[in-house]
Length: 83
Image 1 (spheres, rainbow, N blue to C red):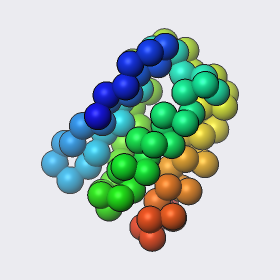
Image 2: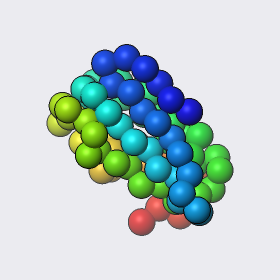
Image 3: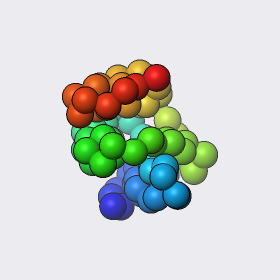
């Protein structure tokens, strides 16, 4: 899955792990895309790594989401264990 725009995301698989690669500018307007991506990953029941290395700008809202809200909530909603 790939989205395009000011901030794009690519969801790939490496073995048993899903990689969510965020590129470009990430701010409050792109959080709904991140929620959708994480719901997709959580439904698969696999582990996820969120790669921010290709992002050119990351708003504090996105950091907060990726570290706490999005990952934990998506996995908990799917009945998966979050750590």
